[in-house]
Length: 151
Image 1: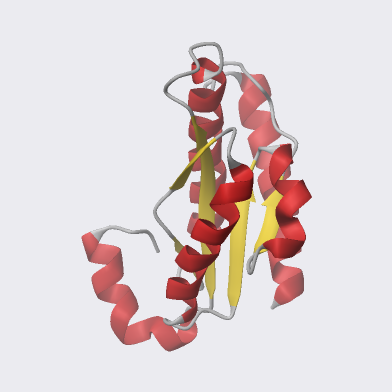
Image 2 (image 1 turned 30 degrees about the vertical axis):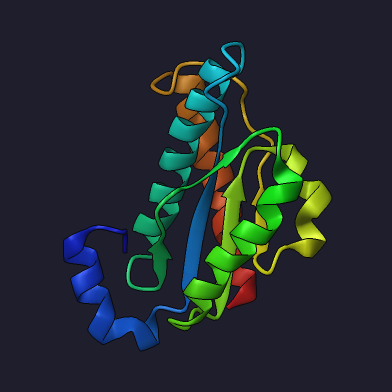
């Protein structure tokens, strides 16, 4: 289920059966022109991944809106992200996964109240290319197995 009206309307009466939320973590820095294409590509790749996982586990997984953070300020983002996670805890979700391609989150993993899913991703490319699509499918399968291990 996704953060759209039809899915949230369906989610509310069924939320006791939907125990997992995935929060996509998206880097963003409008002041850094050199990183803008990389961050935009990571966002696109993150969307493809999380939507594949949500589609596979529809009715069990809720895909939250994207969490945007300033790329160079992760230390300050930890507290803000944990407050976001607190709100999802109130639903209550038993499993909260934070999905990212940014390896810098690994440094703060123990401070996060959700389970970090870091995937070493491609830094650039064409989201429609055969290579990218193959990478996405392979990694999405492994992520699915990882999530299942928590159920």
